[in-house]
Image 1 (spheres, rainbow, N blue to C red):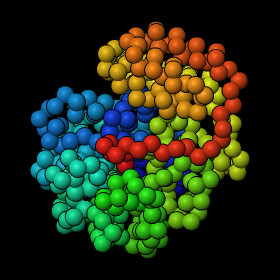
Image 2 (cartoon, one colour):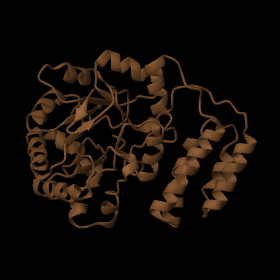
Image 3 (cartoon, rainbow, N blue to C red):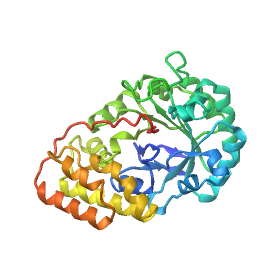
Image 4 (cartoon, rainbow, N blue to C red):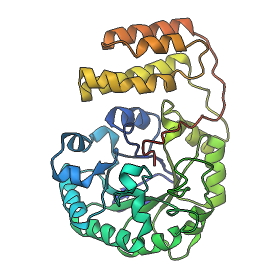
Length: 345
């Protein structure tokens, strides 16, 4: 069974990817309930932490019920990343992850996230600075390379392992691909099969069904899978994959009652953690995903995004349950949401 430092993981762990504006504590709570084995915070700017930016500090919130959980930071300056690592230490997560994969322009063009893929020596220096500054196990999330001509992930894996990282998660696209086209897992498989590599290697990109998860596990030999977009509005994906691995059969699709119950839990936790105004406002992006596949649901969605109290939203969700009672959702691969301006790594 794979382990990350002191963290012992299941035989084939399923990880929830860090996603900006998505992977907050309320969302992580429902994914944990539905089988996620390891989760990460939204990525946090090292500069923001040092400046004591309120939003950056809030992202450090982790709770006992979601452990093991890692805090993910990004930046392009050794000193800033080292200082940020020391700040993260105080919050006592289980691990510290470095983001070298976010392709969004405002991050990458400032020499952070996937921007570091242009300079592997810099990536090594940045990672080394973090490893030396924290007592936590350090992991890295990255991509295959900057573009088709610089797919250097095999070199990256060896060099980062040599300076002390404890696991590596690889998204099967380059930075220039963003989230377009299909993820290429062949290089992820090569990294895993490299006899020099002893740390866990986790694959990421386009896993949207139990069948694909099993196929990629068997074909590429990875130690676990990281799931991002497929979990948005559908945290059941984790339990479904685990059940399929164990039995070769599918769990029944979640009913409308199941979907609304999880949506409500997500809403109530969002309300409690973010406050009444922000919690309700930011929950609006999730309703369409929880209710996807219901005929004529647009009318209800349009209502849900106008309501300003939990009680009103609960009432509409209860009405949806009554109207669609007995509706059978199709068992099809999950449609991956395009978050091109986010970082669903």
